[in-house]
Image (tube, rainbow, N blue to C red; front, side, top):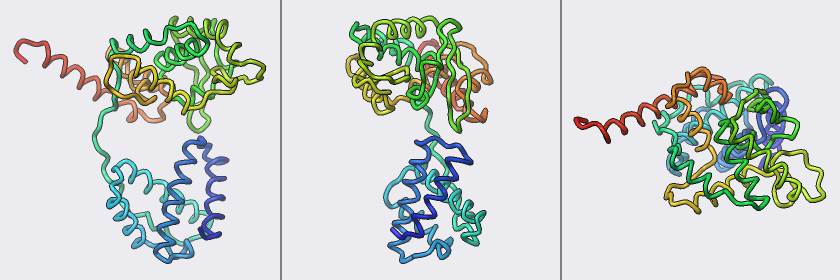
Length: 299
């Protein structure tokens, strides 16, 4: 890759870290999108970012479609590159943004997947063991379902962030925004048991201040939580697969199904815009429609 590309990318990443306060995971996505585009430009013989124009952007879009990227992925890549070139314009490194007039493809109208209440009960039943990892897994599952926090937020929880007396959790969300989230008795009890009977055994002689740790005494990673949740699902009779965000979707859907208002759910989820939360109203409407069609005699 051209050194000029690498230097521009490094400066942009620093901008995302210091000015935008983006999470490390979000920045990883930006880096991947930039590297992929730089590879494309090299193949096209473009050696200077100043020479990249709208024709190259359109050709790149064609390549993404030929490679069968989903609309959501294409939209994200366009957004990443548009932000990158906007930054370069601001720094007067380029005179124009080749992505300025490239339209985002309309995303598929897929509704988020969630677990029904009886499926959640199955998950809780299979993590009722007494070993340290079992206690940790139950505490994680209870907390994810009780709060709707993101997995990345869960892995960053420190011991000082949780208040078991007030049943509240300080969550550090996207863009380093902080919010307090309440949790219920089930999650509180699971965490207490884990702290008393599981965490010390896992910690061994380590000094980690993370709430949830792995069997090496280090803070658990998002990948570790994904692996744990997949293992739990395999122990149940469910045939569906799981991804960690499903528990966040489940949290929001169950709240709305049981009468919570949209603004409260927005605040609990840490959504900056109400439109992000409104997606779950479509889920609940779909759920009501299926229930009606299944049980009403004249449906």
